[in-house]
Image (cartoon, rainbow, N blue to C red; front, side, top):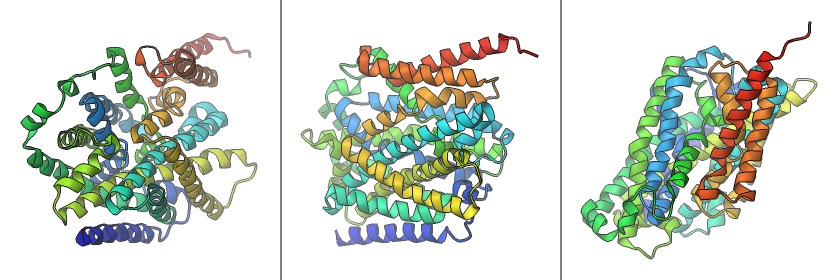
Length: 461
């Protein structure tokens, strides 16, 4: 284990040093948020992939497949579909929005200051929730592999991420993401291969695992509930702040579209790999705590040295997502809430200082999320409710060039929020359908109707 510890420590030190070095020359909020806007499609592919493959889509996926079966893999492919659709229909349009650094910049163009501030508010809460999922996973990783209490693992892991993302901004996030992507793209498939060898292949898994683990939908889940879960992953992270920022860091719209498409295609086999690790864990130890499915496989089947590299890969999974959402939260807080609420503009150095300060604040919110909600993937779904029913429809309309009105925006967000809340907490999710999906459709209907009515209303001259 000494070799494993040395590998993990060395890896964390490299990530920290690269992140700190990346901060050289950063002077403005734009530098912090979108760096120099000159990245190619392969770098965009790596940073996008590293960002979305966080604790929820790796450790959380293994946990859910261990418990419910492969239906969770198929549901996660909803996220893959979303990435492909964004690459096809939205990424090529990014050239129409020069100078954008945040979601609020886009919303301002469609709905004015009100749209910018509201989107900034919900962006911060969404990002805090998703970072919470990652730091919760950090606690599990440090506890299982290094014997550190989860709360201290959360503080150590989150501390490293906060330090380099604060000092280096988007440049640090992108450079560390590329390193982290390379490690995780090798590490987790390696863990699955060793796991399959250990249990005797897929045939041994099929013989040992209950047959209902291979059914879609999962046993006890209605078709409507499964479709709503699939749509939750289609809609939940659609156009969230870090992904919007990624759409504006490439050299041009062509690189943006190619990088996004590659990321979506890569996610399809990757989700299958992380889910299959859950089945390996179930085969090895059916009595295992589901939250420990992936760590258990790594600790059990891998030899010394290889295990250290794979643990570094798992840490990469968590850190690469956490840094992106910390940066997204800080950018949205300053650019979309603080700046439009001030009567006088801030000096650039003050904007940059505040953005760095918000990184730490969101980290604290994330720790609260992680402590309050034990399941990593459940944290993600909870956080999605701050975003999809409220922001996805009006933001997508702006990016697609649709005719929009402030009245439609207000009607949509009100209908979306009320619809999701009533469905989840008053009606108690009939048929297991997620309120997030209901909220999005309520938003879409109200947004469309009010926009059409506004278009027909005669203007007083």
